[in-house]
Image (tube, rainbow, N blue to C red; front, side, top):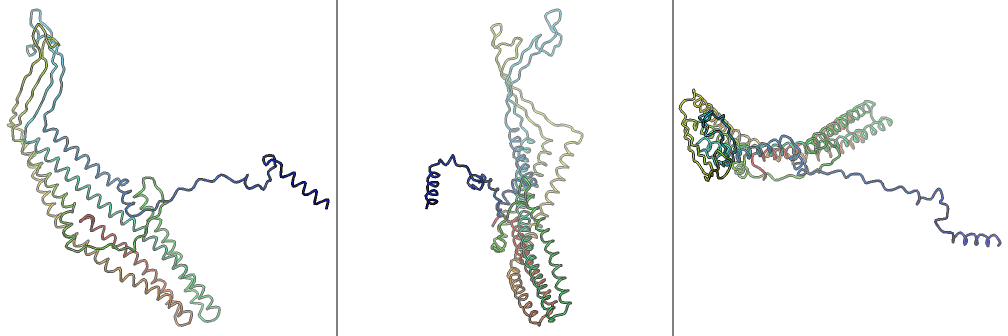
Length: 447
């Protein structure tokens, strides 16, 4: 009884001691709780659209085409400015050695001291300037078409690389599944061999298949790594392998009709636009070369002072005034240089027209080929899906027959290999259709 009273008193006294004055136990978890560590950065997940947007920003070849278009546009601005009057303000002072009398040494000068402070408006009129502006406009159209070619080519490259990684992931998963099935088959064959139901040769065959599947898995992982690296270089400004891709390979976009594709290709083919623009550039080069045979007219207007004193008024005279000058330059003889330039331009024009006809033929052939590729790849998808499903059923049934003693080890191995091949073929076929659509859209644009 006394012990209970002492214990109660001790607990009551302990309860009134301030918490801050109590000694902390070594096992006090609240005092030892570490501060939370920063959360790891989220791994980005890329869709095909994300990859395309990143590639447009980071791909140097596409950015070079963008830069070339920007330069061509500025060339056109400069050529247009060359057709307009220019205004400058000139200031100069000329001192001429005087003679012992009232004159000065150089008769070409107007006095011992001459001050000029004039604004000048200059305009030069000639066919060469007009042709130069027209050529710059045609060159800008050519650069725009080449930029579009680069953009569509980049789309095809990104589609190939993006779905190359998706296919590589599929093949790794398929090979991992095949490796598990091979290991399972090896276990079954060993169990049956211990029971005397199959020969030891079946175990050897199963072990060889397991080794082969492990080797195939290592190769599949290596291929997936290479595909990931290729996409990383294409879409990221700073090299990284930490990203995921959206697997939408199973979605099958619709294929437009032949008539629709032909109509889009007739309006939106950048290869043909580039070829026509090249011919236009060659035409303007020829026009500019022929302009070398024609006169040019230069007009100048001056306003300011040209006086012996640097002043608006001197000796009661207003020094401000204006003058006009018109100069007509007529080319007479150039040792054949102008004729040579014309000949060069004619050669370039002929080559540009030849390339245009070749581009038109190639566009028709590419359209036919790309559409046939897409149509064939689309038609094969159902067959590939069916083959993959049948191969899975075949392996399941063959394994059951082997366990029942009705099939050989060779049949099981063949069923395993067939399943892996059919699954990989399905993934490759789906990527093939996506790539065929991307190639077709290089001629038609997005549909």
